[in-house]
Image 1 (cartoon, helix red, strand yellow):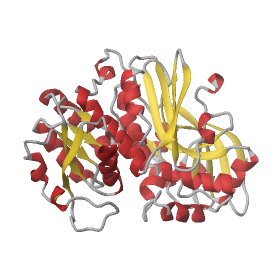
Image 2 (tube, one colour; image 1 turned 90 degrees about the vertical axis):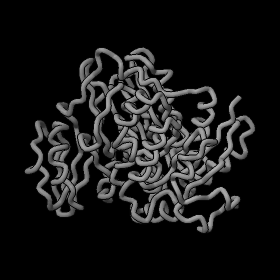
Image 3 (cartoon, helix red, strand yellow; image 1 turned 135 degrees about the horizontal axis):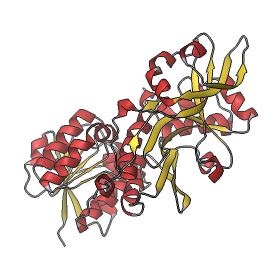
Length: 402
């Protein structure tokens, strides 16, 4: 059996986790032979032979002994450059860069085909949860109807503290930052972009279609207010940041990321703290649920290790659904039912609700629950960015199946 010789890019929290799990695994038949970092002298939690470090990308890409590149850096542009160069040289790659993949996946898939080289990225979407490989292999037919879930551990930790421990949003965010679940600038997580990029990748494997991130409505939790939390508690629901892709007919599917009122009957209602949870729904098997840690050093490293070991058997994604003759097309021409809370922003002047179910006006805040086309939310997203505005989805899909 050919031993895997790894060139590792990035040695932060995840990179160090990869080093640990590769070293501990007895059956990986893998060895990290070079690690590319910006600063080899930076203090790190684990001790590594200094000779393994390099600051030169070419020290890895030109090394004839290296037969796998593993990339876990936080710079999407640099990650794209590394991954593309490696693949063009015929070196298989394992990547954890969701931002880079969501923006460049069509090009990288084409390179895989033309250069006959593998790119694996299970760790990019849900940490330790093997969503991509399951969608590729087990759900490799056109019976899949929906993939929906909590894809971001940072925002879920914050909302769990709010709803389960009655913390304020500000305190919950501070705790998430103190524990390392959220960055000092948490906008990537709490504004929904992390979930968005993961959803883009998941959709390629779920339905065989790539949708560019800018075409997808995305709304986060940064403007959640005590009045929204109180409303949810009165209705006996929790607010979760949910990403979903759903077939609305045989010909069309839609996708979006936004807070959602989740009832106790739903699987994701009990997904708390930094955990992720994904519901996969199909015509013949109804709902199946996957749960686990979606981020962190060792959970993500374990997923990377799985991809490394898959290369022992020359595994690669086949993208079977991309070759289907009849694939559903992406549409925003659907109607959602939403909760919109506001104070000074003229939400009802901005959005043309086709039907209003409930309305409340007070000195402190106002809200309206109504039906609105998804395309209009997408078109007017910038007008809904005020700090006094919060939107949440009220589910309408598959209610009769739960």
